[in-house]
Image (cartoon, rainbow, N blue to C red; front, top):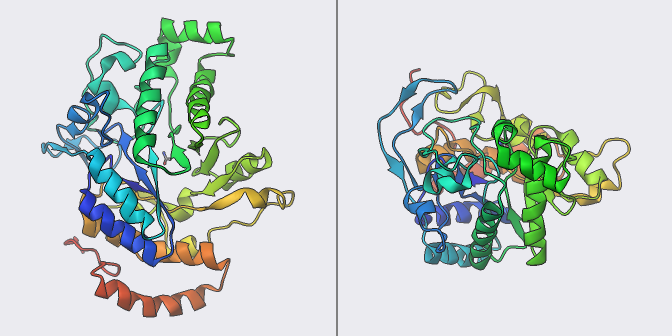
Length: 373
Ligand code: ACM
């Protein structure tokens, strides 16, 4: 999973990203196309999504809750032709591109473009310049549902993948709790309260994708609240994956402690430009635990695989992307294809493989930027 919403990357770079995935026998490229800080997916019916939502005035510098900004406008968006070419380029290399359109949270860029999608249509919001969890979410009117069905229709026209990701993570309910229209929707649908609008919204979009013959995918917040037709990507806790698998859902492991490559690579990493907090070192990635819990043998059949994530709040350049992704993605590929093997054996093989990474110009060993140390 590469986040091109926080920092846009041109499609020429995405082709290189695909080449590196194919080299490691990774067969799905999950492209995170929309978020609070940028909308990169062209939608002909709603052009302001990219015209306005594709650009932000500046970016927050430093860790979460920082109050510093860089003052530099930033943006970009793909054309439909570019994305179609990327899909074909990837397919020729055995890689399926799975698009992600975030909803009903992580939508501030869409709200900046079309304020009527929000819970307070009279309000003007900018494309978000902060990082973190934004309290602004989609409204729940029929118009909003139709708008996002159209977004998904155009997305499906470009991406033929069986799976289509519809986000679902980190969606505060504060605006719905205060919105008369949202509370009215709760009453009309017979829901338990504003919190139930999240699964309800996800179900509406799931139904739309299923009717179109696709398989919806979403991030798990708990493992038990996503529509049963959804494939579940568990990022907070492996237990969420197993809970979903026991309910009969397909799951993809994306545990942040082992697969979030925006976290520092090692203790004392100059890592200034990685997310602060946890370290995800090579042993952590290679040790990703896919063993079912005691009662989970049947559920193990529902594990589709695992995914490495690169969120790009603090990552603007291809060299920085590759420094964070490699060699950790090598460890993940080895773990997924090879099973829970011997770490020493992996690192011995990785030593040889590093020669290939060098030849390809992947900055896997040292930060490709000046460090304080
Ligand atoms: C996530 O990290 N919000 C999926």
